[in-house]
Length: 308
Length: 329
Image: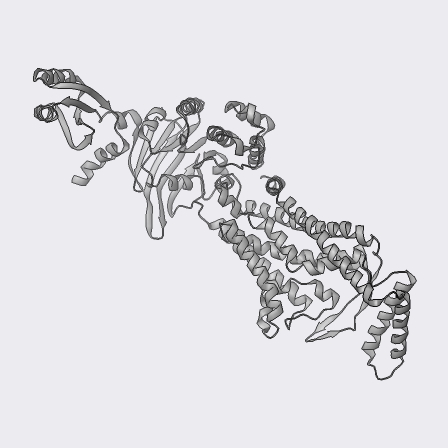
């Protein structure tokens, strides 16, 4: 089933003082999906997002929201977008409600009921009359989302939404985002943390140094290739040489984690290898499944390209 | 299409909630009594010098002297005209029992504006205007403002309209506060008091041909109208600075030093005629009404109005072009 496309980037490029910050990137986001935008700091994530919301003008290429070009049909395109770019910066000297009324005056057709509805949705009813400068970061974040939902957008753009939130807040945000997506909203989330994208997103685009490396379904892209297992054993050298000699396993010698041996191995071989180590009188203190970091992922994905 | 009304309301709300207008009112409430007291002391001093003589006697004496001189044939005709107007004015003082050496609330309101228009009021305007755009950069709220489904020129226009409204409010408030406070000391009468105006500046001479008497209320309306025009010009320039300089403190510094440079130039540059093209030496529009000879040669009412107008339009042009085209990070 082909779903409607809410956001489309086509060969988007940004050059600042002869530097190609964004090197012609393309991807599209469908209706009702949570789309991750993954990349380390400085990879061009924020610049891309700023082009998507009309703050920065692309040097070349086209960005369309629900078919409207963000440059040519600026107003129509932005009417479909709700966004929080970087920190949820609202007016600290106004109350939460005054902030929402303020933004409501800038979007056509927002009613009183709509304002009350978004306040309820983000669970801020109790404190909505307080000044924003007295809000916690989590509350500002929720007010930011309320603001973004005011205009009934088709696309919600959140830039590093979990920054500064506690684990409880992150869990709630995740559930909320899923709920929004189930209602048919496209949610675009940028992050530099792989684990976050894995937990929240359906599909992901991975950006590095201004180029998209991969676009795909999160489960296929992020989990399949990575079976990183760390062995903690004594004596270290004997355990390492034994593991290196096994045909099922690959030891990553350049990586050192405390006293552990970093390896790549299919999970079904772990019991067999463990037995072999114990047979040789090696003491095993722990075997750890390690989630790959973003750096691991990049290393893996760019490895082939560098050698080629 | 969204109405401009809501956008202007937003901008006004921000200025009010940031307490900018209250700062201005507070400054006026603190300083006007000080100026009133200074004026009061000056009046006391003046009366002490004149001695205890009845002011009516000295005014009558002055009228007699002038009348005698009028009969002389050696005095040129336009001088005579001016002298007749002076007599008319002094006769009014006698008829209405007004002591010309003692000020009233209305004279104070008039003098206050003519002293404040080139520096004091512009500084108050800078308080409001300097962060109107740059403040959004400092707070990061510019990103929220520009990601709305509203075109950038409309956002900037709403800011400009709000600024004009507040500038107008400041000019009016200055008048009201000056009148209300000084009236306590000097009394609230004097609206019909005659004031001389209609002077024409031609080269380095004041042409008195068109001189006539106006009731003081009309004079004050004209004076505040001209000041309002000068203030709008200052607001436009400050508006551009706020767009160009993202740091509010730096922007405010630029404006304050430009305005102060104006007063210094006025005192120094009497030999440098091209200095007249700077906006800050053209702010003293009330001088043309009072017939004071400008310190920089070549200034006249039309010249100053045109110069301020050109500065304003050019500033707005730059502000709009930069604001609409700029990438926001």
